[in-house]
Image (tube, rainbow, N blue to C red; front, side, top):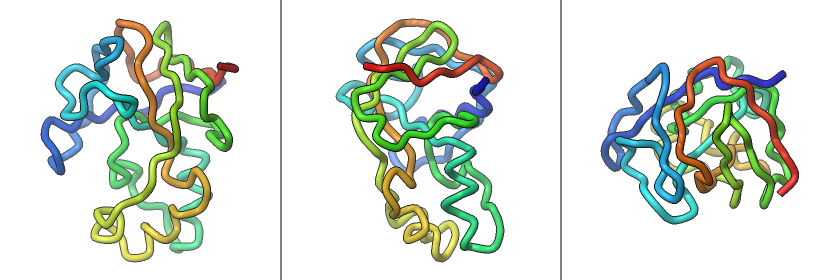
Length: 145
């Protein structure tokens, strides 16, 4: 079964990604304390399975924190996941699209932006559907929309 393996909160635009063992999430807003609130890009998610695959050509696997996503999950394939629902513990997140890599990826690791430019290589983003608490170790499921 897939699990939530990391949580990071970005407290300001372009700010550091602060690791957290758990986070409160609010429907229609996102992670409490995170800079991105509202809209369809409330939470960004990357899969460790996909991260290892897209970074393999770099010769090593950079720390997934460099991706600047809010959540790292294990063994989830986000390919064609638009409209599906990611369930983490009791919280649901509707996937609205794939996250595109930006110049910050290249600044962190030369070649990373290009490596992540494959379809769904940057992970996914979505909207929180339920209020609740998520924690590292929570079970994760990708459900039909």
